[in-house]
Length: 428
Image 1 (tube, rainbow, N blue to C red):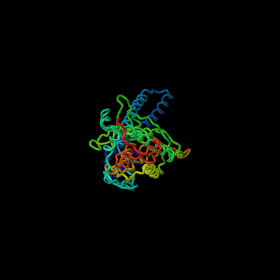
Image 2 (tube, one colour):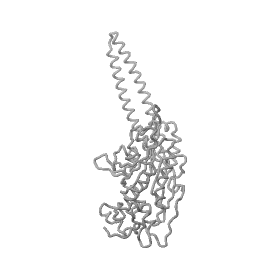
Image 3 (tube, rainbow, N blue to C red):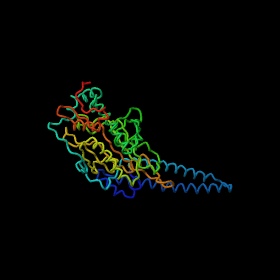
Image 4 (cartoon, helix red, strand yellow):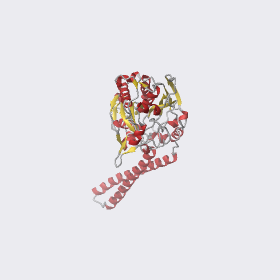
């Protein structure tokens, strides 16, 4: 959520900055609502002064043993007016709150201006693209004959966009989760978290998934629970309504979780294979930082995610999102895109973002720089470290061999009992 004080003083500047990301700020409505709020506050203060003065006069009349009935009735009327104005203030403040909660974050000045991913800017490419002396297959053709992926049975069990991994495929998924968590916790300094896989509406509001993106979520009927779309939601909300010790910052968490998304609006996209699923596994990295450190921590976060691909010897590129391609809450975002030879394209395997104080305001997460100093909002950041299923795809497509088998990357072999090659297995 944006800073109300900033909006009041810079509404036209905010309008122009938000326009760069394709959002039209209704300045007229904001100024009207804020004006109503100010007028009510002024009138409320006047009535409270009248009430205070009247109470003093009433006490004086009582001491002088004079008739106080008229003055008492006047004060009762003023008291009712105060109650009415307080209710009016609550109403208009709720309207302001609801209005501001629908406004996306302001883009960082360093973000390239553009309305779609076509204006994203490539920052760097790392690693050489693999060369094959045969036509590489996409994972949906390569994996079923190996007995490690069964899309037909997954569809029978649940429906489209759900995975069913078996044998070496399931073992590879589990190995990736452990490998990623080991790197991030043992080498990058993150503390491992196993969060709840459901969250309430307050938590989802804090991370900006609600109210705007409810259609993307799976809700548990007749409850306030939602299946989490990412571990970002529960992990960020660990500190909701808390005041952190500034000396502890940055705080870094790594969490594995399954993720559940309705993929509303993605009809017709990635209909083959398991690239875009309703359920998928992910290792999420979350940081809480001081405002002055957050951009440097974002670069570090991207580097932490990149390290996984480097260890797996997978070619990738890093792109910075344009203003219009960023998520609702982000001020600056990078995508890490891994090379998929079966699709002859770089595809996203991680998105890393700085949300500055946007989520912290919504979730009320603050820190005290030093004892006795005024509290401030933290900056929150998160990124995939990595999306497990998409990394799984990258491995099988990049490490496929001419005979239809798949080599196991050296970095993962200790996690699969030394297995070096995935060979055809019996089907489920």
